[in-house]
Image (cartoon, rainbow, N blue to C red):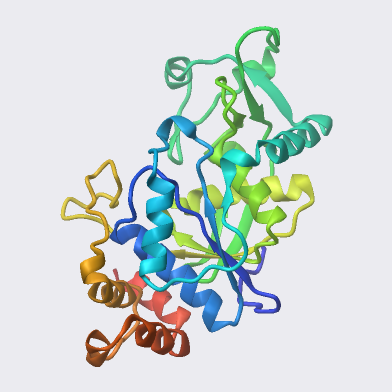
Length: 302
């Protein structure tokens, strides 16, 4: 099992929003958690704009997100990275995986997959149709990664041990779509390695993706970051806050109260007087009094 207990030597964390809309309270929680964990351990905190899925990208959203982070007093290290400008790196990784014999073309439609598969984590498990029956590469096709009989186990800093068998639970997954767009799973792994990310603090909605990413890290010879998945903010209907569920944008006129609320959501115990101070006072207290282990207890109790 990969041990994700904290090793703070040369800590480098990141916040990686998708520019599909403005920051809402759910994304604020992820930003605050990753920021405080990095700063409490005197590490770097990078910002990466995950705009690889260009059809979903909203014009101007990236700039709005960065301005919001600045207004909230969150200072990032190094230059902001945009995935849409890094496709050459994803292509190089894809070539390496193909060289190892792990990549094959797939022409199956979503309907075909749904009709011939069983349900797995997050959707139908790909039945391996094109892996068993190679197709002509001159047809429009996606590129899939072969999974094998390997169990991925890691120790999450918040939830403890987590195990997944990608072949049984997910199946061979897509690395590049038929429209030529590289998928999140490939891009995030390449970016984290290239930026030397050592600690990943993000929402638990991405927990099920982590074993696939560790599998890719193994194949590409990358170091394995330490993971901590935060509780996900939901609305009254139990749905994750998102653009699709009409989550309200962060109100910068109420910046300090929302920061304090995010801290409380993460199981911390900020004193009431923080609401009477300045944003700089909030960050000073929060960095000095950050307790990541309180997140775990708070999540288990939910």
